[in-house]
Image (cartoon, rainbow, N blue to C red; front, side, top):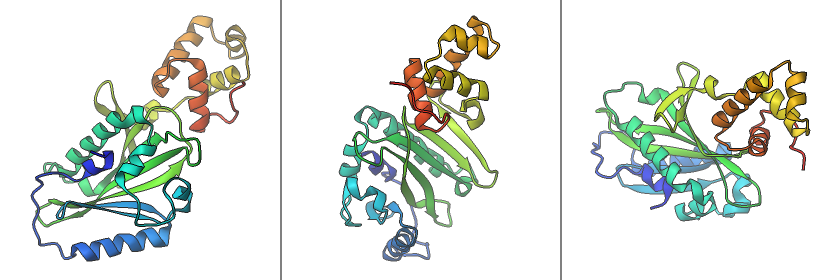
Length: 253
């Protein structure tokens, strides 16, 4: 099953008391995609159908210019194959958040998944914004909307939970299986300096001296950097940090 098709929740009970019909719902989403030049997928939970609208020219090199001809399989084939299982788990987790009736804030949250494409032409990565688009009066989910935007990205796919009424973002920690504040995953100024100097080819002992650190402390900070960026080497860390715009200079070749 294609990754995004998991947004269609099997066996989900819905009612027909919504004031908007499926054709009207599609027309509304297409109007949003056209006016905003967006690439969107509408998951209609009532009809168990998926509809695409690609009006974002940045994606034409990957998917062509026909706004209706995008198949889920084609999107999945462009995503880094090593990330398929992880992205599927992310989508399934999102579904549980949108269908948990014990939570009254579902309409005040949305999720984003940042990932890379397994291709060498632009765009190199994407941010999939997933939000609950329509509920019935019993708080049953009727439709889910996915908006795909091109981004500059590298590294493992990341799931983020956004709270619209609190201006707050949490990041999903794979190890603990919990959402944690995004601030705890961001690189500090000194971590960015270490990567910047490493990318310039400065040796470890000279970096420690320049930043007034002991060598053991420097090594501990580098370990923290690796954990935050989910990488195993300084070269990977520099590359990922550059692609995510944490540092503003490319790694040396």
